[in-house]
Length: 182
Image (cartoon, rainbow, N blue to C red; front, side, top):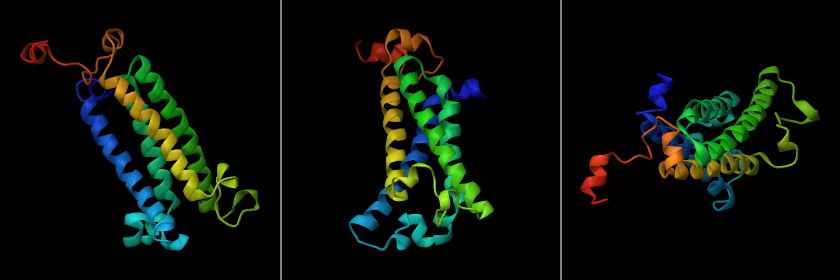
């Protein structure tokens, strides 16, 4: 299954993964809009889904689950990348691993009802320095940007990179080259 996921189904898997990532981004951007443009109070600024389902945004399980989905997706799709694309994808994976640790710490605090560092609410390590909304916009940015760079290089591999992977995302079949007059 992993060979198929990183071979002939890699483009489809990347596309589905990107939809999940962009939906998550939309939630964070909607929340930012609610806070800084609409001037809603922070507890009311819950993104699109959170307005309809307030309990969802307050659930550390939901946030941890998404962090785990991201980590898993980055890990499972990594074998399909080669060369420069793999380097950038690995950067995203490493940053997401740390982001996942931060969410695990939040989940542990929420489940045990014991907040670390004397905080009044579950608090991650970098949240000691940055507010949670801004921190998660930052995390999403520093994971997303190397993912996009990786996908760019992945879809435009040099010959050595193209030969190093079974994935066909960046390959144009010979008949399409011929039809295009290449």
